[in-house]
Length: 208
Image (cartoon, rainbow, N blue to C red; front, side):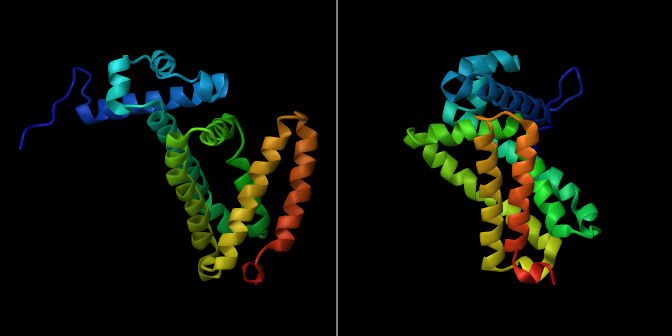
């Protein structure tokens, strides 16, 4: 078995490759937010990441591959952030309310804007739509897994799954609507109103 090659900096080839992928994915998110999907080109992403076009093509052959991988990567990062809060939520006196607030929190910022750009572009791009169709269930399943770990067997039901999807759809809808009315105080008030409705709609077994 050949020895692992290392660079002058002491990093292995696998580590250098992972670092390059990370730069490309971060640059993709930046471009989606700044230029939208149509303005996000592979050349622009490579320039922002500080890598050659050849290196970009080696890791992600097409633009659809690149942007889909970026959104999948961000979804995993958000999941890690949520799971890191597990102990805190387990000790909460209001686990449903605090979990809803966490769902709201992890959808804030430029990441959601980038994800939405991808979803909108998928409507008229069959290749991209096929890739997004693979990522979306992964994102939804993370929410369900989180609920199972937090609430235990009570969350292992179709009612909880439907509730989790509805909560996520509510968060996304509010945030998309907020772009037309960029008033933070109004958005917070709308979230509190929606959160109160979601709390009432929570499966009874979660409050037991």
